[in-house]
Image (cartoon, rainbow, N blue to C red; front, side):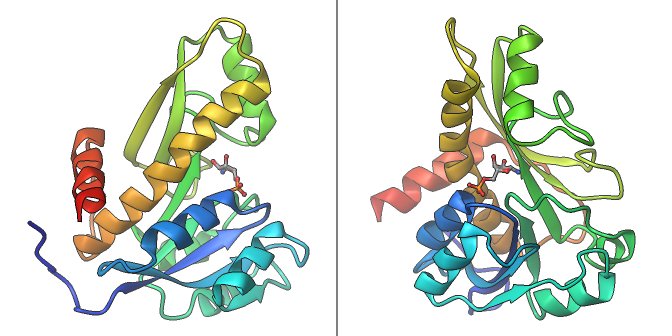
Length: 217
Ligand code: GRF
């Protein structure tokens, strides 16, 4: 049984994007009707990001950043959002914005951090590195953003197997599928907890139990 611990209104979430926005779409779809969280605004580093069309279709207000290095512009763009999600946002968030959004700023990464993360490790390169390294598992990680690329405390991870014969694209597709489940679950759970002011770690079993509960209602 859920208890609403924060406000009775769904908590406003801002999503920062740069690309196609399938994770944004997963959030929009999964949070529709959620008592805990809603996608309240989308902020893009690019005017031509595919994610923007998804936002418009869902009626979510959009801001395109003029200068991604301007912390004040980013903080203004996320407005009253209590939780800020980087979902395929490829720019570095300036340290002053990270400090301002401490433990309220999270990212999804398509590998099991701390492996296969860091500067330059994004998109297809991540999966190429996993295959080249001979790893038997990959997966998705949701973590807090701090001043170092992909190094902030891990919130939750969802592993997937690396299969014999996997290509970069087959592995990417397998990981993306779990990203689309993991990210909304983490966002909803953080919102349900009122966005704790200290880092939290959430076991996958706990999240998937919630997912089953959601599915049963
Ligand atoms: C995802 O793989 C995410 O983990 C990474 O960038 C990709 C974004 O994809 N940070 P999309 O724009 O959500 O489709």
